[in-house]
Amino acid sequence: PPSSPSWTGGQCFIVPLPHCESFVGLDEEVWQEVHRFQQSLRNMFRREGREVLFLETVTRTSRGGGGGLLGLQAKMAVVPVPRRVERDAPLFFKSALSEVAQEWGTHGQKPIVLNDKKTLRNAVPKDFPYFYIGWEGGGFVQMIENEDDGDDDDDNGGSVGMRASGGSKSFGRDFGIDTIAGMMELDPV
Image (cartoon, rainbow, N blue to C red; front, side):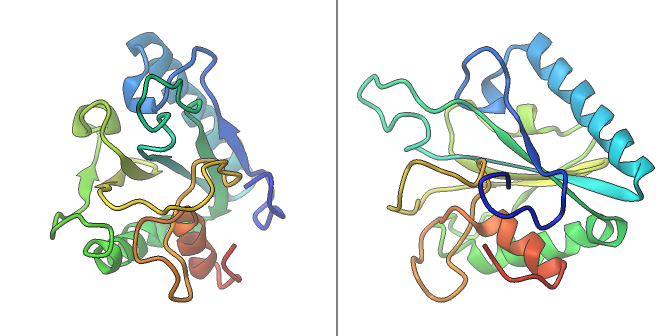
């Protein structure tokens, strides 16, 4: 996203004005505004012949790591992609999430499938770490148990990931962006 070279153009973040550590924890009124803004972004990029993927990650460290510290502000990465990439996102992310599930300590938990009735906010308990990928009409949420010990100052907009070349076997910060890059036949971040 924005701090790295923009390889899709139009990448940005949705950041709620009131402080909140995750989109799951937003007040209903703010959540509805976020939902409307997501739809506006979809419509804007659709006029350009593109679709949008939304990524969020919430880790224990992003929530201040305990001790009464104020956590980081919630932010959701917005990644405009070609239509074919958005159409293929369910297949690619289901496969990628199943590959890393054991490494993330999810003990065989499958990703939670989101749709119009099962949304991010009613699928994830408040204060649980998770990875979220969303597209028009659906998405996945994967609960996270093992987290990367890397830098907490996340410059990838809440996007997350596993090290593409061996590295950490725990939850890393570039998983979502790296998966999208792979779908677009681009180098990982």
